[in-house]
Structure formats: C-alpha cells, structure tokens
Image 1 (cartoon, rainbow, N blue to C red):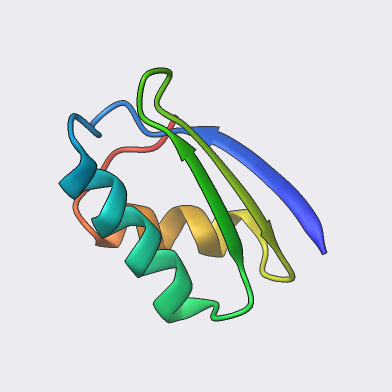
Image 2 (cartoon, rainbow, N blue to C red):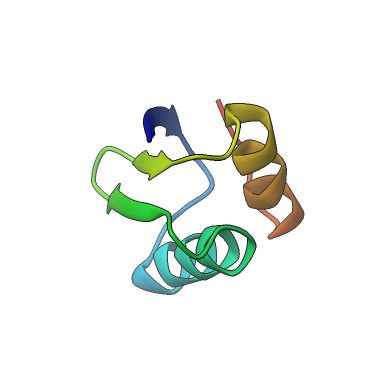
Length: 65
C-alpha cells in the first residue's frame, strides 16, 4: 500500500469530510482514509494510483491541490 497525501481546500465541514471519505472508500474499499479538516489535508493508504484517488475526490464535487 502506498500513502498519498494531498490538500482538498473546498472542505469546510464534517459533511465534506464524510463525502470525500465515502467517495474514496466506495471506489477503493480497502483504502484507509485520514482527513484533517483544520489543515484540509487528506491522507490515503491505498493500492490505487494517486491520480485515480484525486479523480474520485473531484467527481465528488471537491477541489484538489
């Protein structure tokens, strides 16, 4: 498993955190998702590629840096 770290500046509440987490886990059930809402940092341990995880987050309506 690889650790992917990126920022999702569009997250503003726990609902956003839930949306992003569910989107990633729906696409990649084995993924471990850790989100810090204060810093807007997302950490994902997954077998999936970084680009595919970021695409899932964008598809859920959020922006990725």
